[in-house]
Image 1: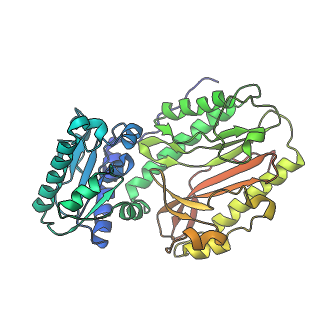
Image 2 (image 1 turned 60 degrees about the vertical axis):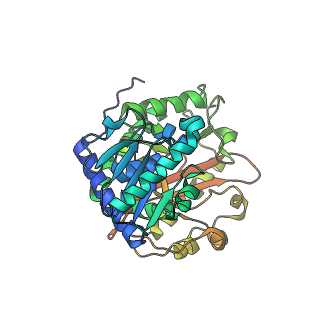
Image 3 (image 1 turned 90 degrees about the vertical axis):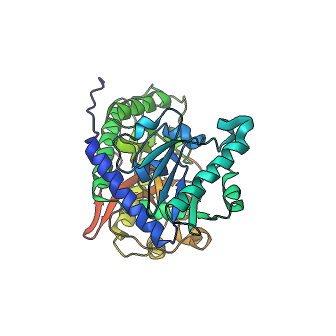
Length: 402
């Protein structure tokens, strides 16, 4: 099939407006949590807070840039070498400085000097913003950063919790970017499905998804969750060179960082070839579909996470061992807060909270027998509104299986 994918990206003005809205929300949440300022190292969190993208995967693995965000005062981006131009035109960044080599990868034998200079920068900024004695949030920093800040007399707290809460509620401009990402990702899945032919390998078909996603303005795919036949169960087997056979189930979880850096996370299960489904395939698909619809119907503003967990679809015993890791999780620039566990393990990893308007979440289902055979993966990304739940992902289900 000829690749003819339009560009789904919206105007840069909308992207910058979303950055302005996100920064304002983040500052509100920091203030509510009594955090005077925060330093972000994670590339996704830097992008959320100020909108500036720079080698997102690379700089998450090797933290060569970081962002200082005070509740009041200048936002300072400490940027990777020779990359200051990337922040041009962003009203969310007041100043760009070269990043210190706080990761030894960048500073070599001079690491101690770079670390000391980093601490001095932060002390100066805290004083400049009138934040002496205020709590400083830090997230995902190289291992020496937090003790160095504490030795300098700063009160350090975990900044990941507050930004996770900020990210969970989407702003108006942000929702426009989310919808653009969904549209582009679904177009890429449609291209992939038309190339899902028996005789091709999983890798070859999965490559078509990547090609179409990037052609439409998307960025990358976080995982390799695309499998066929016996490799669909248990889930979380990575895409390989297995040849897809006619009559096999083929499962996909997109995990796509689409347009504007927003995460489109939906799952579909296809039937390879033109033949009919078997009764077992239809039964598995029907159960996964039932679980998905039941759990989506529960969602509403004000529903507590614990109540949702307690009311989730009861999974038949023989499918419990291979169930998905959670029935629902938040979604934004990646998988986000909240992750809500099943009722039988809520006491181990559950959390208090409730669903709020303008949360985007992903409802998950995987049905696969503990004794083997094929499995079915389905997932929808939805928006919670005061009027109810809106499906953001609208890709059709497989009619031969449903």
